[in-house]
Length: 252
Image (cartoon, rainbow, N blue to C red; front, top):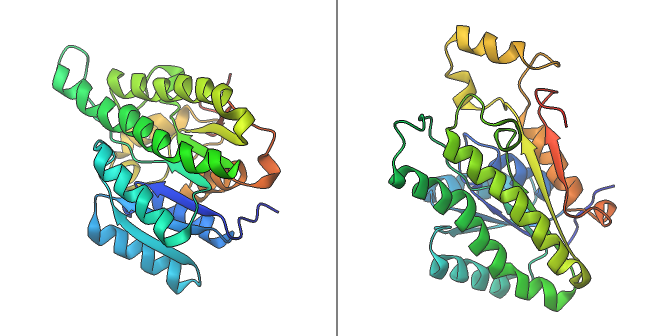
């Protein structure tokens, strides 16, 4: 189940060893997808590509700035030139900043939205043409528990707002492109076991864990497995949805 053989997947923000994107790229590759490793970090791109190819997968590394339309168009062109199609887009690239509204500046808000929402919009818009042409597409975007519960540990109000915007944008888009064979869904991770989490002081870490019924942070593989499901044929009748992956720290 959940095989992605011969599918072509772009995963933004998949060059960093510290986040979820690399695990998503590796997991989709394990399921048979050909992966476009898209990131600003050239060294990180090379590391992710190597990890995929050493495991027997197929990957193309592309340097991309998701806030730059020309850069995104070039990424899409390289993908089509190399693989001939685009089946899956995972909008994973994102940034955060811990700052109060009192101390926040317009520059802070603009920077967060430029990556988390406007960059996601540009990447999504760029792949719609190829997906419509082939009458198939899977768009999976990463939101956050912060979008639903009003903040968390790491981000400010602007981060929460940007991730809430991802949910609204995705639901509307799902209505627009359903008849084209394209599904649009989100995953909303809670606390995940990354370097940011590991850097928390023990007292703060214990406080966070106390609010999670499962009593632990999530693992990047748990997020990636859900993305793989949403990208698969088995999820063909799921669109306009978000899946919460937070150990119970927020329940709708």
